[in-house]
Length: 282
Image 1 (cartoon, rainbow, N blue to C red):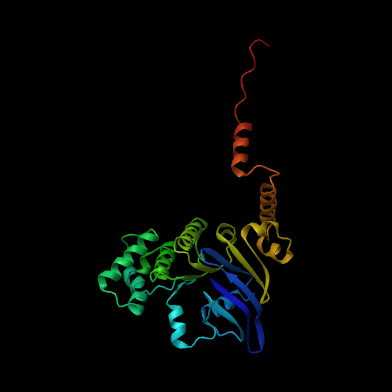
Image 2: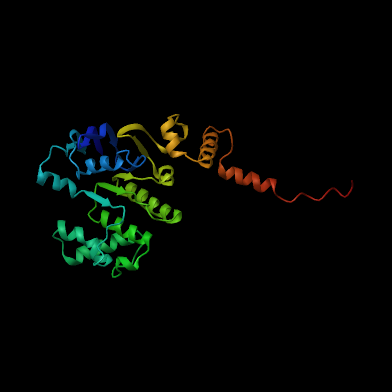
Protein backbone atom coordinates (compact mmCIF):
# COMPACT_ATOMS: atom_id res chain seq x y z
CA UNK A 1 0.00 0.00 0.00
CA UNK A 2 1.12 3.55 -0.78
CA UNK A 3 -0.17 6.51 1.18
CA UNK A 4 0.17 10.05 -0.15
CA UNK A 5 -0.38 12.75 2.46
CA UNK A 6 -0.81 16.43 1.57
CA UNK A 7 1.80 16.47 -1.19
CA UNK A 8 2.72 19.88 -2.58
CA UNK A 9 5.22 20.57 -5.36
CA UNK A 10 6.22 23.83 -7.06
CA UNK A 11 8.64 24.78 -9.83
CA UNK A 12 10.01 28.34 -10.00
CA UNK A 13 7.26 29.54 -7.70
CA UNK A 14 4.46 27.93 -9.72
CA UNK A 15 2.42 25.38 -7.79
CA UNK A 16 2.03 22.16 -9.81
CA UNK A 17 0.72 19.83 -7.09
CA UNK A 18 -1.47 21.32 -4.37
CA UNK A 19 -2.28 19.37 -1.20
CA UNK A 20 -2.96 15.95 -2.77
CA UNK A 21 -3.72 12.98 -0.51
CA UNK A 22 -4.72 9.46 -1.49
CA UNK A 23 -4.33 5.79 -0.59
CA UNK A 24 -3.34 3.23 -3.22
CA UNK A 25 -3.95 -0.35 -2.15
CA UNK A 26 -2.14 -3.59 -2.94
CA UNK A 27 -3.67 -6.05 -5.38
CA UNK A 28 -5.39 -3.39 -7.44
CA UNK A 29 -4.63 -1.09 -10.37
CA UNK A 30 -4.52 2.52 -9.17
CA UNK A 31 -4.87 4.94 -12.09
CA UNK A 32 -3.90 8.61 -12.21
CA UNK A 33 -5.70 10.44 -15.00
CA UNK A 34 -6.04 14.02 -16.17
CA UNK A 35 -5.36 16.37 -19.06
CA UNK A 36 -1.84 17.40 -20.04
CA UNK A 37 -0.57 19.83 -17.41
CA UNK A 38 -2.91 18.54 -14.72
CA UNK A 39 0.01 17.39 -12.54
CA UNK A 40 -0.42 13.64 -12.82
CA UNK A 41 3.13 12.97 -14.06
CA UNK A 42 4.66 15.22 -11.40
CA UNK A 43 2.58 13.45 -8.76
CA UNK A 44 3.80 10.05 -9.89
CA UNK A 45 7.40 11.27 -9.88
CA UNK A 46 6.94 12.58 -6.34
CA UNK A 47 5.57 9.20 -5.26
CA UNK A 48 8.41 7.22 -6.84
CA UNK A 49 11.05 9.64 -5.52
CA UNK A 50 12.23 11.26 -8.77
CA UNK A 51 11.00 14.61 -7.41
CA UNK A 52 11.30 15.78 -3.82
CA UNK A 53 7.96 17.27 -2.68
CA UNK A 54 8.00 20.71 -1.06
CA UNK A 55 5.82 19.36 1.74
CA UNK A 56 3.79 16.28 2.59
CA UNK A 57 4.66 12.62 2.90
CA UNK A 58 4.76 9.44 0.83
CA UNK A 59 4.53 6.21 2.81
CA UNK A 60 5.32 2.75 1.45
CA UNK A 61 3.64 0.09 3.62
CA UNK A 62 3.65 2.57 6.49
CA UNK A 63 7.31 3.63 6.07
CA UNK A 64 7.89 7.34 5.45
CA UNK A 65 9.76 7.31 2.13
CA UNK A 66 9.96 11.11 2.02
CA UNK A 67 11.96 11.31 5.25
CA UNK A 68 14.41 8.53 4.34
CA UNK A 69 18.05 9.08 3.45
CA UNK A 70 20.06 7.52 0.61
CA UNK A 71 20.52 3.88 1.65
CA UNK A 72 17.03 3.59 3.12
CA UNK A 73 15.49 4.90 -0.10
CA UNK A 74 17.59 2.47 -2.10
CA UNK A 75 16.09 -0.43 -0.17
CA UNK A 76 12.58 0.76 -1.02
CA UNK A 77 13.53 1.30 -4.66
CA UNK A 78 14.61 -2.32 -4.89
CA UNK A 79 10.94 -3.14 -4.30
CA UNK A 80 9.78 -0.85 -7.13
CA UNK A 81 9.35 -1.86 -10.78
CA UNK A 82 8.96 0.76 -13.51
CA UNK A 83 7.38 0.43 -16.95
CA UNK A 84 8.40 3.54 -18.90
CA UNK A 85 6.29 5.21 -21.57
CA UNK A 86 8.71 4.43 -24.41
CA UNK A 87 9.70 1.06 -22.91
CA UNK A 88 13.26 2.43 -22.40
CA UNK A 89 14.99 -0.75 -23.53
CA UNK A 90 18.72 -0.60 -24.19
CA UNK A 91 19.08 -0.80 -27.97
CA UNK A 92 22.56 -2.31 -27.74
CA UNK A 93 21.41 -5.18 -25.49
CA UNK A 94 19.32 -8.14 -26.49
CA UNK A 95 16.09 -9.05 -24.66
CA UNK A 96 17.82 -11.40 -22.24
CA UNK A 97 20.41 -8.81 -21.22
CA UNK A 98 17.82 -6.04 -20.94
CA UNK A 99 15.78 -8.08 -18.48
CA UNK A 100 18.86 -9.30 -16.64
CA UNK A 101 20.09 -5.74 -16.08
CA UNK A 102 18.29 -5.19 -12.71
CA UNK A 103 19.41 -8.65 -11.54
CA UNK A 104 23.02 -7.74 -12.30
CA UNK A 105 22.66 -4.49 -10.37
CA UNK A 106 20.85 -5.66 -7.27
CA UNK A 107 21.52 -9.38 -6.78
CA UNK A 108 24.48 -11.72 -6.35
CA UNK A 109 22.75 -14.65 -8.02
CA UNK A 110 24.62 -16.99 -10.32
CA UNK A 111 24.24 -16.54 -14.06
CA UNK A 112 22.08 -19.66 -14.23
CA UNK A 113 19.77 -18.32 -11.50
CA UNK A 114 19.47 -15.02 -13.35
CA UNK A 115 18.79 -16.75 -16.65
CA UNK A 116 16.14 -18.95 -15.06
CA UNK A 117 14.44 -15.83 -13.72
CA UNK A 118 14.64 -14.10 -17.11
CA UNK A 119 12.97 -17.08 -18.78
CA UNK A 120 10.35 -17.20 -16.04
CA UNK A 121 9.24 -13.59 -16.56
CA UNK A 122 9.41 -13.91 -20.35
CA UNK A 123 7.02 -16.86 -20.11
CA UNK A 124 4.81 -14.78 -17.81
CA UNK A 125 4.41 -12.06 -20.44
CA UNK A 126 3.89 -14.67 -23.18
CA UNK A 127 7.22 -14.12 -24.96
CA UNK A 128 9.15 -17.38 -24.57
CA UNK A 129 12.23 -17.85 -26.72
CA UNK A 130 12.89 -14.23 -27.71
CA UNK A 131 16.01 -13.97 -25.51
CA UNK A 132 18.47 -13.19 -28.28
CA UNK A 133 16.36 -10.71 -30.23
CA UNK A 134 17.25 -7.02 -30.10
CA UNK A 135 14.71 -4.22 -29.49
CA UNK A 136 14.86 -3.19 -33.17
CA UNK A 137 13.49 -6.62 -34.08
CA UNK A 138 10.44 -6.30 -31.83
CA UNK A 139 7.01 -4.81 -32.45
CA UNK A 140 5.71 -2.05 -30.18
CA UNK A 141 3.60 -4.49 -28.18
CA UNK A 142 6.50 -6.91 -27.77
CA UNK A 143 8.74 -4.09 -26.53
CA UNK A 144 6.16 -3.18 -23.89
CA UNK A 145 5.94 -6.79 -22.75
CA UNK A 146 9.74 -7.08 -22.53
CA UNK A 147 9.79 -3.84 -20.52
CA UNK A 148 7.07 -5.25 -18.26
CA UNK A 149 9.11 -8.43 -17.79
CA UNK A 150 12.10 -6.32 -16.77
CA UNK A 151 9.90 -4.30 -14.39
CA UNK A 152 8.81 -7.41 -12.49
CA UNK A 153 12.05 -9.42 -12.64
CA UNK A 154 12.98 -8.45 -9.05
CA UNK A 155 9.54 -9.43 -7.69
CA UNK A 156 8.61 -5.85 -6.77
CA UNK A 157 5.90 -4.92 -4.28
CA UNK A 158 5.14 -1.76 -6.24
CA UNK A 159 4.75 -1.34 -10.01
CA UNK A 160 4.65 2.06 -11.72
CA UNK A 161 3.48 2.34 -15.34
CA UNK A 162 3.79 5.58 -17.30
CA UNK A 163 1.37 5.59 -20.24
CA UNK A 164 1.79 1.83 -20.85
CA UNK A 165 -0.40 1.90 -23.98
CA UNK A 166 1.20 4.90 -25.64
CA UNK A 167 1.72 4.25 -29.35
CA UNK A 168 -0.10 0.91 -29.36
CA UNK A 169 -3.14 -0.12 -31.37
CA UNK A 170 -6.36 -0.77 -29.42
CA UNK A 171 -6.11 -4.55 -29.55
CA UNK A 172 -2.50 -4.60 -28.31
CA UNK A 173 -3.42 -2.07 -25.63
CA UNK A 174 -6.00 -4.49 -24.28
CA UNK A 175 -3.32 -7.22 -24.12
CA UNK A 176 -1.02 -4.95 -22.09
CA UNK A 177 -3.88 -3.90 -19.78
CA UNK A 178 -4.81 -7.52 -19.19
CA UNK A 179 -1.20 -8.46 -18.37
CA UNK A 180 -0.81 -5.56 -15.94
CA UNK A 181 -4.06 -6.50 -14.23
CA UNK A 182 -3.21 -10.21 -14.01
CA UNK A 183 0.30 -9.57 -12.67
CA UNK A 184 -1.01 -7.06 -10.13
CA UNK A 185 -3.43 -9.60 -8.70
CA UNK A 186 -1.09 -12.57 -9.00
CA UNK A 187 1.74 -10.91 -7.05
CA UNK A 188 -0.48 -8.65 -4.89
CA UNK A 189 1.40 -5.59 -6.06
CA UNK A 190 0.43 -1.96 -5.59
CA UNK A 191 0.25 -0.85 -9.21
CA UNK A 192 0.14 2.85 -10.13
CA UNK A 193 -0.66 3.74 -13.76
CA UNK A 194 -0.53 7.16 -15.43
CA UNK A 195 -2.76 7.04 -18.49
CA UNK A 196 -4.76 8.98 -21.06
CA UNK A 197 -6.32 5.75 -22.36
CA UNK A 198 -10.01 5.65 -21.46
CA UNK A 199 -10.16 1.95 -22.35
CA UNK A 200 -7.63 1.36 -19.57
CA UNK A 201 -9.74 3.41 -17.18
CA UNK A 202 -12.84 1.34 -17.85
CA UNK A 203 -11.02 -2.02 -18.07
CA UNK A 204 -8.59 -2.01 -15.13
CA UNK A 205 -9.49 1.06 -13.03
CA UNK A 206 -9.95 -0.44 -9.57
CA UNK A 207 -9.13 2.99 -8.13
CA UNK A 208 -8.99 6.18 -10.21
CA UNK A 209 -7.56 9.54 -9.17
CA UNK A 210 -8.58 12.40 -11.47
CA UNK A 211 -6.22 15.37 -11.33
CA UNK A 212 -7.27 18.86 -12.42
CA UNK A 213 -4.96 21.88 -12.26
CA UNK A 214 -2.74 20.22 -9.68
CA UNK A 215 -5.51 19.16 -7.32
CA UNK A 216 -7.38 15.95 -6.66
CA UNK A 217 -10.67 16.68 -8.37
CA UNK A 218 -12.28 13.23 -8.03
CA UNK A 219 -11.54 9.68 -6.91
CA UNK A 220 -13.42 6.42 -7.20
CA UNK A 221 -13.68 3.19 -9.20
CA UNK A 222 -14.51 2.57 -12.85
CA UNK A 223 -18.09 1.83 -11.80
CA UNK A 224 -18.29 5.07 -9.83
CA UNK A 225 -17.32 6.99 -12.98
CA UNK A 226 -20.50 5.85 -14.72
CA UNK A 227 -22.65 7.52 -12.08
CA UNK A 228 -20.41 10.50 -11.33
CA UNK A 229 -21.99 13.93 -11.63
CA UNK A 230 -18.64 15.72 -11.58
CA UNK A 231 -18.81 17.93 -14.66
CA UNK A 232 -15.04 18.26 -15.15
CA UNK A 233 -14.58 14.48 -14.93
CA UNK A 234 -17.42 13.79 -17.35
CA UNK A 235 -16.09 16.33 -19.85
CA UNK A 236 -12.70 14.63 -19.70
CA UNK A 237 -13.80 10.97 -19.78
CA UNK A 238 -16.88 11.23 -22.00
CA UNK A 239 -15.76 14.03 -24.30
CA UNK A 240 -17.48 12.77 -27.46
CA UNK A 241 -21.18 12.28 -28.09
CA UNK A 242 -20.51 8.59 -28.78
CA UNK A 243 -18.86 8.08 -25.36
CA UNK A 244 -21.65 10.01 -23.65
CA UNK A 245 -24.19 7.68 -25.28
CA UNK A 246 -22.10 4.70 -24.14
CA UNK A 247 -22.15 6.06 -20.58
CA UNK A 248 -25.94 6.48 -20.70
CA UNK A 249 -26.35 2.90 -21.91
CA UNK A 250 -24.04 1.56 -19.19
CA UNK A 251 -25.97 3.51 -16.53
CA UNK A 252 -29.19 1.93 -17.71
CA UNK A 253 -27.57 -1.52 -17.65
CA UNK A 254 -26.23 -1.02 -14.13
CA UNK A 255 -29.64 0.08 -12.86
CA UNK A 256 -31.33 -2.87 -14.59
CA UNK A 257 -33.50 -0.68 -16.81
CA UNK A 258 -32.23 -2.38 -19.95
CA UNK A 259 -30.68 -5.84 -20.45
CA UNK A 260 -26.90 -6.11 -20.51
CA UNK A 261 -25.02 -6.42 -23.81
CA UNK A 262 -25.15 -10.22 -23.86
CA UNK A 263 -28.88 -10.35 -23.32
CA UNK A 264 -29.37 -7.59 -25.87
CA UNK A 265 -27.51 -9.70 -28.43
CA UNK A 266 -29.75 -12.67 -27.66
CA UNK A 267 -32.83 -10.50 -28.06
CA UNK A 268 -31.57 -9.13 -31.37
CA UNK A 269 -30.88 -12.65 -32.62
CA UNK A 270 -34.42 -13.60 -31.72
CA UNK A 271 -35.91 -10.50 -33.33
CA UNK A 272 -34.00 -11.05 -36.57
CA UNK A 273 -34.73 -14.79 -36.84
CA UNK A 274 -36.71 -15.89 -39.93
CA UNK A 275 -40.45 -15.79 -39.49
CA UNK A 276 -42.24 -19.13 -39.32
CA UNK A 277 -44.23 -20.01 -42.45
CA UNK A 278 -47.91 -19.09 -42.25
CA UNK A 279 -50.38 -21.75 -41.16
CA UNK A 280 -51.42 -23.65 -44.36
CA UNK A 281 -54.96 -23.87 -43.04
CA UNK A 282 -55.49 -20.10 -43.28
